[in-house]
Length: 458
Image (cartoon, rainbow, N blue to C red; front, side):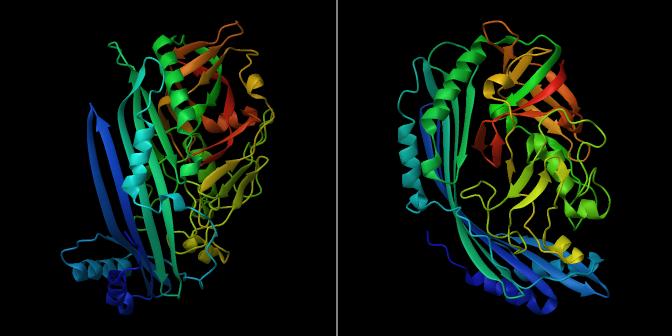
């Protein structure tokens, strides 16, 4: 499949250009190859999509109206759809602002040339590598491989024209016992934009070990522990929905959105420029994030970086054509900068940075061994979570622990399971400890584990 800017995008722009004051058009083209294996059967399919997201701006008096519309590849009545969007833009009036002249896009690689060939061929090669035995007594119970190639083209009425490609590989597998009736399985989830960065043997080996430990695990006794959040628990997939600080501009009310950044969601949500402008954040640039509490742990440094090569959240431009930049959110416990989309940057007269992207967190001072060493209380090292629900505005969280390891000072480290924890992540920040060893996983580049002191497990 050859990706190129379509004539349809030109037609959409022509239909609305005279009806609005400014516009941003984003066309996304995606081709995916799927291979799924369940119960000895294989299903193969190829999917291609082409969508256009259109942002329309109309200046009414001293304000500016804004409407967004998504246009699928097959729309029964395109002209009526666009007419309604133009009418919505005239009603949704907010503060006045304007699109700036085009700026240089971030120079970042997010397309792997190794996936430029036929996507189904590449998916087949990965599938064959998973046909090999993965360990004595274990097997791949079900498997899904998805390879995605795509292109994004952005055009604005201020003269910006930009296109970039991306690739993404996702592998989901269930690792099970080769024999027996145990219903315990281990879920393997791997995502990468680059084939060379995919280390399947290591991921499979860890999954097999965790499945073995899960079968041996006993229930964790409720009590007070120090919690070491590591492995998949540090960057959890099963994240619930937290209260968003800022809703969609069209709605102009509080709304619900996925807590993308897991444990760090309430911390980085404070960097939202609009929430800061209207006074809805806990702390502002120049302020300590700990309030008046004494810091006994590792001072927190958090950076948003959308220019990480092949980063999961990396991209050259934001949704409105704003350049993505690296910026510091928190530096050694002090709030530093904000996440500016194009609108907030224009309202304040500053340069947009593309908003939040991959998180880069500075390592701490404790070695992996010291992180797990019990001091006043036993340590529970959490390898994964059943689920995490965290509120991005208050910091309140509730989580159910999955597989964990109990370090109580005895010679043996015991696998345990179960238990619920709840609290407020902001209460733990002054004493948080971060490991000196780092890892890269999904949108996260930072310490491989963090330690929360005196957590009650129910």
